[in-house]
Amino acid sequence: MKKILFLLCIIYTAQLNGTIHNVPGDYSTISDAINASVNGDTVLVQPGTYYENIDYSGKNIVIGSLFLTINDTSMISGTIIDGSASGSVVTIKRNEDSTAALIGFTIRNGKADYGAGVYIENASPLISSCVIRNNLAECSNPIGGGILLQDSKSIIYKCEIMYNTATGQDVNNGWGGGIAAINTGEVKIINCRIHHNTTTSILGGIGLSGAKVKIIGCEITNNSCYSSGSAVGLQDSDALLVNCTIAMNKATLNEKSSLYFIRSSPKIYNSIFWYNGGTKNIDGWGGVAEVYNSNIEGGFDTLSVMDSEPMFADTSAEDFRLLAASPCIDAGNPDTSGLDLPTNDFYGNLRLCDGNKDGSTVVDIGAYEYVPQPTGVEHKKVTKCPESFYLMQNYPNPFNSTTIISYYLPETANVKITIYNVLGKKICTIVDDKKEKGYYSAVWNGLDDLSRKVSSGIYFYRLKAGNTVTDKKMILSE
Image (spheres, one colour):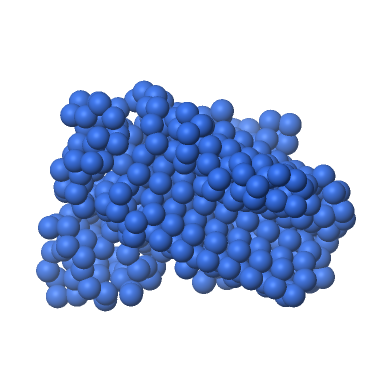
């Protein structure tokens, strides 16, 4: 597996106010640490392979590897929860809310009827910076090889979901090889790589049924199925796809599309559909796909859609970033309001960048933003950094329980981020640490310093770093 390059890293600092249960220091297993936890606690797991199947048991806790505290992405590949093919590896299904989180693990070798890697039902946790791979949903009609979300409003952020399978009894059964979502509230899948997932029937990468889902900044590649929707499929669902790269997905029945919809009207912005099998990239019935500022092989009946070779960096190495001559650079919709674009892409590049050096900052088409290189090396992107301390707008905003606050340090500095209400009263401090130069993020989960939920309304967050003090406004809604 390629090393995931996180220039923007999630630190779930707000939750570290509770008791920290160390594994294996305090408890030999993650399950034992969960049993000892109460709402607001953190289970912090050292590197190693843990052969167990864990259940949050209705507790709003954070379970994280050392990635949570030291930002080292090797902790993700080095901290493994292995399900030993004896059920879902992680189960979150007892009304856990958005303050529950799973951060910085490799989740592998689950085997279950549904949601073999991560099974989420009647819960809305954050799943961040995880690799979910080599899990198998298997029964007469399995759903969700990697992740199953049912009656959920989860956020899946910066995860790699790969080599998962949903294997049914025949070609009419089994869907959602990577991710399946059923009867959900608004689920957000942001800056994820979803690849090499398979099903025996339909919807190889992502499958939606009665779901409301935003898929933003995602690479969906090399997924496969027997019939329709090798990349994404939706039935009776509300789907928004923004800045996605959908490429090299295949169906055994070659005439079937990579995105297929039934009684649904997906909205697609700034996305690439290329090198997929089938006569049509987007097809379906009972609805109309709305497509804007995208690049689709074979074209689409919309004026703002181009049909031009996207010029990926290296498809043989599965590198779907853009080369300098790509027509997708600065070709996205100039108006990104309402699209919920995060500040950075999966690799940490600023999402709005003047890629073609024409003096304007327009979002690119596709999952990855092109950043010009002074060295002439085209396919390895380097973020053009601000020259001073920089506080970004929180994402999402407005939010209903969890939001991400990102910032950039041009030099090593003591950093403090504090939340205030409109009366200027301090609510909590979510960062108070010395940090080196680089991009960082913190997550605020709508709790005060005593881990109590705050009411909806307007709040301010303040960055103090070096001699810099800067504030921004955010809105917490119901």
